[in-house]
Image (cartoon, rainbow, N blue to C red; front, side, top):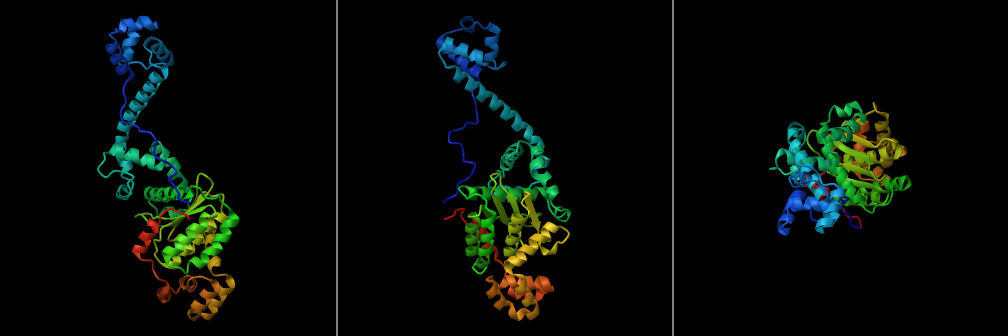
Length: 380
């Protein structure tokens, strides 16, 4: 199965210009050698009304379109379509001009990242950039953007939002959401039972090379109706990951790999799975570096942390690890079916032994992180 974009490009050519019905009417009269007075007589319209249509001073109504069909032989639907196109074009021009007033709003966004991904043109004028940005976020104006993309962020606990640039965060979330929407095409419906099964399978994926393991996790979660995507972090976001409900009822998990430690990457994934399973009434969770450390101020975050810990290292093995110490890392990892780095990360957290465990917690290289984002959105 190959995923396709959810918003396909128009199948027909759409011009960025339009002809005014009055111009067409004037040309038609000229070609026929007919005066405005003649047309007025044939259509029972006043000469003034005909002249106003030609000068674009009044819109062309359905009744007038039918009159022109009878008098000139051109279908009423032609006139009505021409009028609709003209009005839409005029509205677009006026709207585009008004968007130029939103330069300060535009500058709140990470413009370099948006240009690098082709969302906006680096050399376009302000109005064009604003137009493209609104289309990217699928909203009509900056006010709608605030309601759809910023107001939901007040649901995130305060210790997180204080560390986030809201506009950069919304941009990253939209990048991740767009990738997830591509992946969701033809995906199964979301199944909590299947997700629990997939979560157990992910343990073995942690032992694979990161690109191979991520690809396997993406495919397995896709079967549960959960879209896993990776998007490199943006400045001023501090994002670790996100879980979000998509419009079609499926779910997405977006990861950034900001901490780069292998165990942190896999822990973040399990943490987001926990949010989907345990907290289905909350549509979006954004997790920052601090939220995954040991944030007991938010019970839902604490629950997600406990789930992730137990998924990779059940309590009996964790107790043995604490009793045996670092010498048992490899053995316990084998018994748990996870990478040694996972066990080392938990030991480091439980015993505050991060320096001691650093050699057992390999980091994901920058090239590997770039490769994760470049993985083709194809599930086979």
